[in-house]
Length: 64
Image (cartoon, rainbow, N blue to C red; front, side):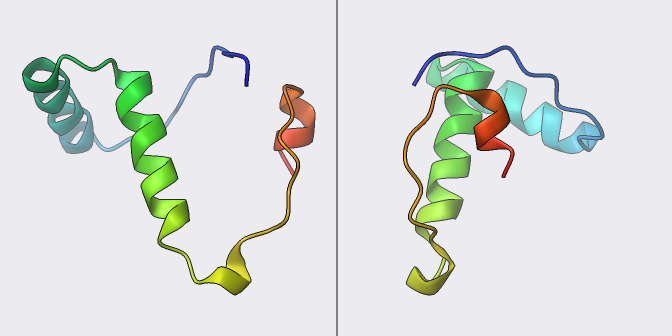
């Protein structure tokens, strides 16, 4: 998957501070941490919630 530049709005300031702390201690970028969090959340969904999606580099296709 290609890297796309994203803007995330309306993130709670406390969550941003937590992200900064984890980033500083882990050495991972915000993007790496967010990717890991999203993948962990998705993998925790019940199987019936997982869609059979093909990987795509097209950001429009990823919007659903």
